[in-house]
Image (cartoon, rainbow, N blue to C red):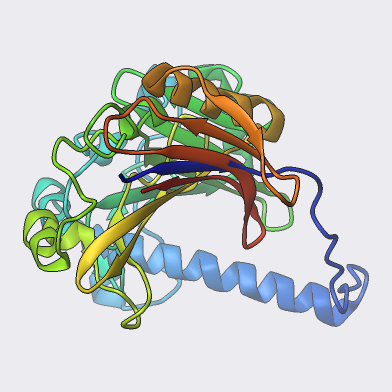
Length: 333
C-alpha cells in the first residue's frame, strides 16, 4: 500500500541582519552606485544598438551613440491585458528556447538568457529558461516612471504582492521597483493553478500514468528534459514542474525518492504567497481534488492533514520550511 503525506508549517522567520549597511551619504558609496547604474544603462544601450544599428552608429563605432528611441510606452504599446507585449506578444507557456529564438526575429543569446529588443522607448527584455529549457520568466526593464502607465493600462496590481493575473492565457506579472536605480523590473511567468498540478491520477497528481513504482530509466524516457538526474546516488531525482502557480510566484518542486532504481515516495513542495490567505487557498485546492482532509497530530505535536481517497495511495500534509521559504510539503507513498 502506497501513501500520500501533506505537511503544513507556520510561524515567523528569523531576522537576518546584514553585517554592514552602506551609508547612503558616503560619497564613495554614492559614486559606486552611480557607476553601477551607468554600466547597466550602457549594457542595455549597446544591446539595443546591436539589435537595431543605425548607419551613423555603425560608421562612428562610438559607445556614446544611442539607438533609435522606438515607440513610447503607453496603453497602446502595452495592450489591455497584463501579458507579454511588443515583439514578445507571440510567446506562450511551454515554449522551448529554440522555439522562442525561431519565433522572435532579433532575439539574441546572452549566456543562459535570451535578450530581445522591444522597440519601445527605454525598455529592454530578457528571457530565462527552466531546467527543461522551457520558457520560465520574461523580464522587462524600464524606468520607474513607467509605473503609472502600467497601472493606467492594466489597473492596480494586488497590493500585497504587486502582481497582476492574466487568467485567459495564464500569465502572472509581478512589478518589482528599485527606487535607488530608478528602474522597474516587470517579471512575467506562465502559471498553472495548483488544482491543475494535483488531481485524481494514480499518484494523486494530474499525471495520468503512475510514477510510484516506476524505474528511473522508464521515467527518463517518458519525461525527457523534465527528468532531473539525482545529484548523488542516494539523492532524489526531480521532475521539472511549473515555474509559478496561482498561489506562489515560485516554482513547484516534485522530488522522487527511490531505492533499487524504482521510485518509492513522492514529495511535493508547494510555496505560497500572502501566507495566511494562500496557505488556506492551497488546502482548499487539495480538498477540491482529494476530498475532505482528516486533521491529525504527530507524536511531536505537528498538525498533519491526511487523505485516503486515492486508491492504493495515502496522503498526509503539513506546513513546513524549505530553506527560508514556507511551503506545503506533500508526501505520496
